[in-house]
Length: 248
Image 1 (tube, rainbow, N blue to C red):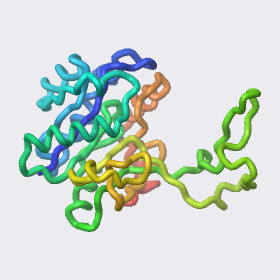
Image 2 (tube, rainbow, N blue to C red):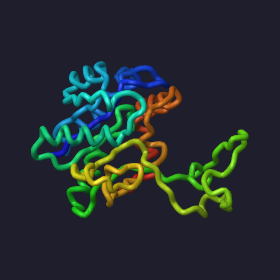
Image 3 (spheres, helix red, strand yellow):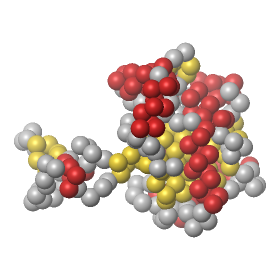
């Protein structure tokens, strides 16, 4: 059995009630729910939340609700601890649980097809612990990162002595989780062996490379604008993805 777990907390400082904020006439959490329900390999959808409004929307859309304990509510929590609690909760209910797809409650840029692809990889490649959607860094490569020192002046982030070219093609490739899909075997949350900070993903995680900015989650009204464009232009989105194909 495979389940989707959507994590969606009540608090948000940037956009009030973000996870139920209406985007194109639907509460934001509707979109990951729809993606999970559209996936042929997902058998049940759960939502982990500390917000009653989020839970109410989830129930109306056919989801099971995981009520977070008080210590896992609010702003300053470790997302990994929330995930571990949710997986253990579901595992206690679903005796034949095999794989988990973890989705964020604040993104529209996922669908059933990419979820099914990730789960197919876990079915076909028994050596894998997980797979996650990522994008390849370019101008935002970590070698270009800077910090602001105590005098308010920019300096190189980390190793101050490094000599970095402006030619980004010379950099070793770097990848970031793109806020899309985490798919993993249920036991990986107990092993804590995943690449930091995604410790619940296990040692062997397959990258599913998507074009930037696919998978972006929502934190600001700028992000909302991108997401609204995405939903209004499905044909153009599909064309862009076709020109910059995902590696799946």
